[in-house]
Length: 109
Image (cartoon, rainbow, N blue to C red; front, side, top):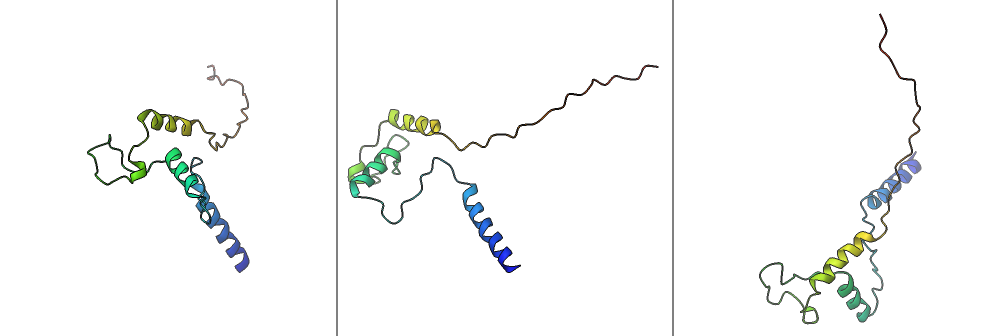
């Protein structure tokens, strides 16, 4: 019984971590994130975590020296559309088998 409970616990833990995953989220590379150039390209190309100057008042010192100029607004909008066009993990709806029945009529008196 303890083996069954531990197996069910591990299964529940794995399913619980996988349920809310968005398919556009990349898996992290914890052990070796790559050379500095690769990391800079990934940060610049996919995601800019620093505050945008056109979203509100300017934050002096809010962006590092290498990221002083954010990507243009057109590229940011394209990034959103490219992410939306990526194939999502869609679960198909189950096919329902409908049985056609004879029409029902009110009794004649």
